[in-house]
Length: 284
Length: 298
Image (cartoon, rainbow over all chains, first blue to last red):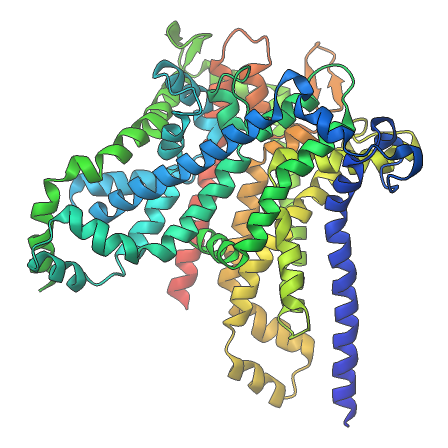
């Protein structure tokens, strides 16, 4: 065997070891959350990195306490978070794909205006509109979990319209033409012919929206009445931000419960998530 | 030919304007256009409530620019954005390069490195504040007590979160480097480093541009992580009685001016928000111009 090959093999071994070590360091923060969620509160600050053994072991008491922690049932936060995320994503996918098809095919002056406004909205930071948006939402009574998806549709339309229009333009017109000749009206053409073809972009856009809405803090915090409606991020921020001593053990238990669905979702749809995020980054 | 077909389609479709474009237009007007226009207008007004706003011209902008805490937050944000930009991109590129060498388990490493991206900013902030305080409490201090701890803490947090993100984009870029170019460099006797700098990196320039601007704008727009990790602490009381929150970034400064300050006018906060918007949009336009220029050259 030539010395080149041996050197190459040695290089790869060293690289593997380095990567494995970094990989372990990478999961440590999450493991720290796990061990501290089973630890008696007073030890979280003093023995953060110790395993919860002996008198530090709290069993599931942190989780039990966390359920009603901060005088707010955690279960409600989960319900609101799930509902808002699912409803907003569904609304965005349905309406922006319809709008994108119309924009790409009709191409009138008004369509161009909407399209460029959407592109423009992608570079506007939320702070620019947060005050006026929350006041507008308030006065239109869009301040409940049942109506906030409309606000998400409005503020989040930009990226998804941009991505859908790009994709629709790559679909050959002949397919829709054939449908029209067969007697399909525009509505049926869209829902039976175009909509199924949009699937790859639907997945990318859907994943970007799910990640955004599920983790979003400021928009729901400013729009919703937080005494009544708290999403998971709002609830966790409220626990830490409230005065007095914070029960770190219970907070970590809630954080763990909050990130488990995210990690499961990630492991199940990993391929799509990575593809979707890359697509969003390259285009946005 | 194309014109004919488009014409054939657009006419029946136009009649369905309200169904296809109506919902998005209405929501977009409520969720973006109207708040944006109102925001620009209110930045020239003195107001506490929107209904009682009096036009005062550029007064809010003068107040915003002469606010020491806002100027501090700008420099702090710029320093943070540039530092995190360099670290995230160098480390993200290194990770992508290592993972495209055909090492066993590359997929597992990629999965792990990308994972923190899915965790929300608020939750990330609290996870890391527990970790940093767990370390620093042994030395009798806390992340809330020293500006440099807050700064580097946030850098570490953002690296942990964002390295996997840029890594994904760099992997896609590295995989598209033509194999025969690398082969040719090898035959010509180029060393590994020469190949990296003379062949690989010039070929992934588009990815580098995307990632640089992405991490730069992300750095400038950062809010959740900043709020949850330090919330701006430690504070310094100025001789004139005003407070500078030393680890407060621009987005948080605007938020605090709106909601947590006793200033008589929210107009100053809105003016800060407009300045912030111009800055972030400017970065976006710079990216567009730069990408266009490169595309023309190639």
